[in-house]
Structures are given as C-alpha cells and as structure tokens.
Amino acid sequence: MDEHHLAFQVGRDPDGQIGGLYGVEATPTTFFIGKDGKLRYRVEGAPDDVKAIQAGLEQRINGLLAG
Image 1 (cartoon, helix red, strand yellow):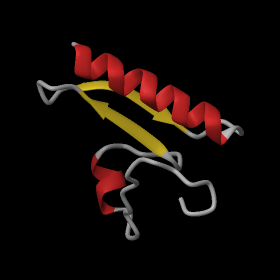
Image 2 (cartoon, helix red, strand yellow):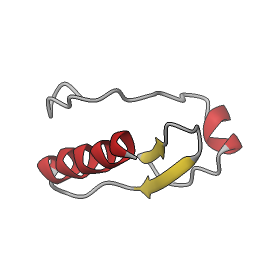
Image 3 (cartoon, helix red, strand yellow):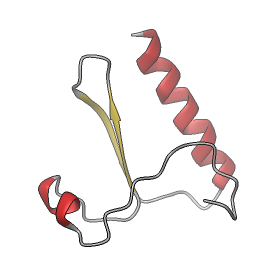
Image 4 (spheres, helix red, strand yellow):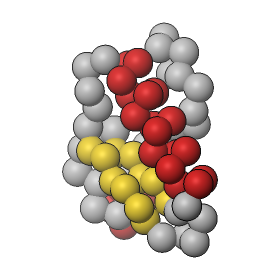
C-alpha cells in the first residue's frame, strides 16, 4: 500500500479464516458492497497497472454510491 500510495483501505486476513468463509482463492480479492448490504462486484487478482486499479475502484464505488 505504501509503495503504490493506495488511497483505499486494504483488509488483512493473515490466517485465511475470512477468506475461507467467502471462498477467496486469489490475492487480492476485492468485494464491492452496495448501500443495501448486498454484494455487487467481486474482482479477483490485480491488473499490472496500479493506476488502473485505482481508476476501476473509483468508477465502481461512484456507481454504487449513485445507486
């Protein structure tokens, strides 16, 4: 996070307990939860370009906030 100056929160699951509950098979896995508490998007893995990650996150978050 520090190396790439990420402006979003990253959760840690060092023992894999939470990952097991949600079927996480790739790191990172990103979950987008709507205002209604329902899962809207799930993204596994990461693109090579950190700026693409941030742009994609912002676009999805803005869409969730609007809906």
